[in-house]
Amino acid sequence: QVQLVESGGGLVQPGGSLRLSCQASGPRFSTYGMSWYRQAPGKERELVAAITTSGGSTNDADGVKGRFTISRDNAKNMVYLQMNSLKPEDTAVYFCHAWDSDANVDYWGQGTRVTVSS
Image: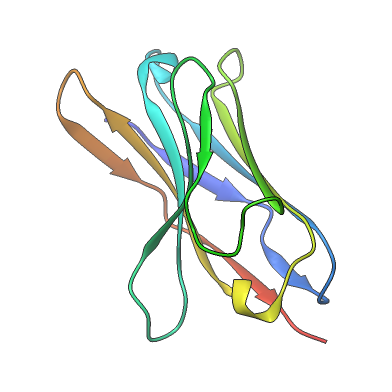
């Protein structure tokens, strides 16, 4: 069983920055594809960004390209989401997600809330 613990959320003004962190347990972190999702009030959960085991990355949510950057540190079992130029529409609960392709199992963190407001 893999546990994912997010941190770094909070209240930030428009135009500000936040860095979300996700700490994963277990010895096989480097073999998992990692992602960040978000869910805004009244909306479905959506993929924000994903990073492969080798460090290739994609940003998939509309409107985050060029503002959000996903990264990982396999030595520390960590994945990060650097969020810059935040907008009110980025307000959501952000979830860390791990995909174990060998076992065909995925894992979710409990989420960290990001509120962008003046």
